[in-house]
Each structure stands twice: as structure tokens, then as C-alpha cells.
Image (cartoon, rainbow over all chains, first blue to last red; front, side, top):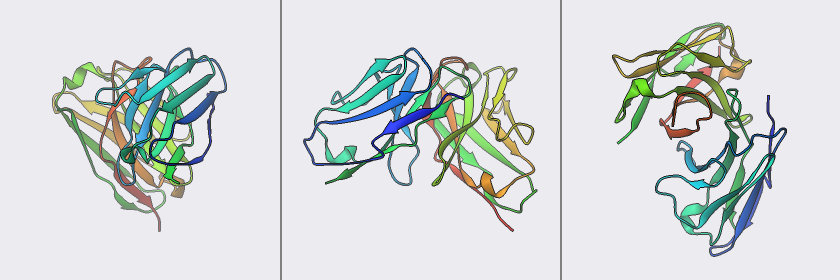
Length: 107
Length: 121
């Protein structure tokens, strides 16, 4: 299976901060990567797909970049609604795999 | 509006069986691949299985192959997951998720609210 390594596992930040989460993949997946946001007690919802395309309804402060084996999710100015856990996921392989998540918490 | 509503979770003994259902609405169900994804505090999010829109093509995680069966009834807009030979490590919240395309190169664009399966004696 394709392995996903996310970092950091926890990120403490303040409202207005720029934050970046990294996802490294064990083999090249071109741009077939999605990022999901999950809040406690809720299902994940897509934020970015195809590495850099904003999902429907997602604010433009979110952006994604990368291809091959290294990807980033950036929030340009952290808002109160953005405190959540973020997961990367590859869909290059039919055996889809997720990163272990990055919890963005209030500093 | 796309809606996915899971049901059928509960407490089951090790070695037992359970069937999860996912009622879909708000889109042309037969045109999209569907998946099950589970989540535990320890193992995070884990893809379990995918089924094509026609129901002809299936994929399973190695951890559930031979024990779980995914199926769908396109006349009822419903996805199923039959869980058998259950183990303690199958304890998880099970999410039904819609793919944005068929099965290849497709991400999960909508998720259900989840159904808790607890395997314990």
C-alpha cells in the first residue's frame, strides 16, 4: 500500500496566522491527492482535491500545492472555524490511504 | 442536496455478523462509485471497500478481504456492507462515502454521518 506521512501531528496557532501542513507519499501519485477537514463528532469533508483544486464552498484562504510525493495544505489566515483536524488522502491507487491527521488547535 | 444516511450499526460479539446500510439521495446513485471508510482513535481513517456504480467492480482492504462484502441496490439507492467474522479490531465508526466519479482516480466528495460498530463480548 501507498504510505502517507503527515506533519506536524499537532499545530498550535492563533487566529490570523498562516499555517502549512505537509503530506509526504511513499511513491509518486501525480496530483491525485485530497485534503479533508474533520471536526469532533462530524464526518470529514473535502477541502482540496487533485492536489490544488478547492472543493465546493471552501473559502479561498485554503490552498493546496504539490505533485508526485510531496504536498502541502496552506491556510493563509486562520479563522475560528478552521480549528479542526486535517487529513491527506491519495486516490492514485484503488487501495486508498489516509495520513494520520494534523490537529490544528488554538494557541 | 446530496444525503447519505447510514444505519445498522451496534454491538456484536466477536465472530458475529452485521449489515450496514447507506441510503442515498440527491444524486443519480447508479452513476457513481461508493465506498465505506472506517475510523478509530488509534488507527485514524481507514478505507475499507469500494464498489462501482454498476456494482460489477469491487475493491477491498486486505484487513477485511474475505470477511466483508460490499453491495448496492440501485433500484433502492442503497449501499450495503456485510460484516462477518468480526474481530475486536473492527470496532469503528463506519462512514459511507460517495466518489466524485466512477472508481478510478476519484475522491470522496460526500460522506454520511457514520454508524458505530462495536465488537465486544
